[in-house]
Amino acid sequence: MKDEIQISTKHIPLRVALFILALLVAVGSIAYGVSSIGRQKPGYSVVDPDDDKEALLYHSGVVLNYYFDGSSGDIREQKNLLRSVYSRALSSAYKQLDASACYEGINNLATLNQNPGQTFELSPELYGVLQDALEKTRQQRGYSVFAGALYAEWNSILTLSEPEEFDPLYNGEEARRIREIAEATAELSSFSLELLDDERHLARFSIAGPYRALLEELELDAPALDLNLLREAYELQMVARELEAAGYRRGYLSTDSGLTLSLSEHGSGQYVLYGSIEDKAVTAAKIPVTPGSASSLFRSFALMEGEVCFYRIDGHARHPYVPADGEYRGLLDASLVCSGEGALVEACYRNILLQTCGDEEQLERTAQEGGMTAAWTLRGDTNRLVHTSGSGEVEAASEYGFSTAAAS
Image (cartoon, rainbow, N blue to C red):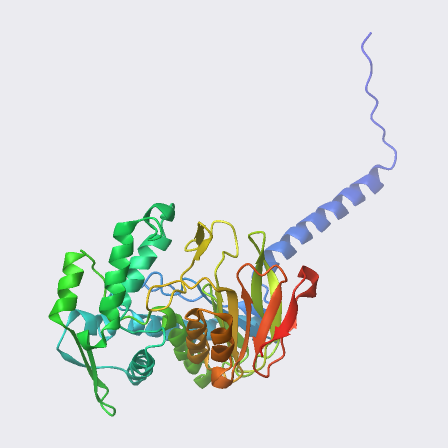
């Protein structure tokens, strides 16, 4: 005999009502979820720039965080307006400072590199950048606007998946190449950057025959005139001026390379000096952010596993922050320089000077120059001391065993 399936008819109206209620709740939840996709909330938000077909990577490694408030509709409108201003400013700055590619309607560094001996009218911004970079180059303290070939050579090693084989520590041919390029780029008489007219912003660039011959001998195709370690600092300052002029002051710009520039009404958060413990990056110290301030972080180690341009070979750390003589001193583990006045280029330049120091005494003297706050850690320091200079507040990360030791 087959079992009979009994269907209860009790409480059918109640069950129907509960089913309808559950269905309404589900539909309502889905509708709310769909409507929330475009909902904008007050607070800090990353502003994604528009695409630029002429320069697909112009925003790579650069981030704008901005504080928005008001209704969802207000925030959406504010963000769209800011995106337009930010995209134009960043694209313009990137293209003007590009040493390799030319763009229609723009006279940039590549224009000067590819047309030696010819005079071009530059934008006031680019002309000012070259004035400043040339002045720093003439100091010959670790920065050179003519060291494009040197950085191209080192970057060709740093970006390899297995760079050890080509590191000059073990590769004699590569060591010779880097030495010859460094000596050639240090000879300032081989380069002529003429800033001819401060009102019309006329400039001309050329290189001497022996330098050109060296590049041909080494089969190195690299622009001589290049902002290298200061490029992104100049770029962020150019963008920040445009944002401020347009009334956008409540945010900050940052780069993957370690630069941060706070706009004039952004004063929250902390600039972080990282340290390394057993090859792991941790917070070593913090410096409070003040409105309109800026910071430059250099480090000898990767922040995350697999980060390009960082490796170690036989106890020597390799990273992108090598001075213009092409030599790693190996003294610093990481260094952070902060400017309360928003002088990002100067903070970055001061960080380059620290990389040229060969001993702790020279390091302390150099860190005290320029009136900025500096904090740094030393390679191999098992005591985890954070050395400091300047009047700014530096808080060591005691949770990771770091403590401060003021420079003498």
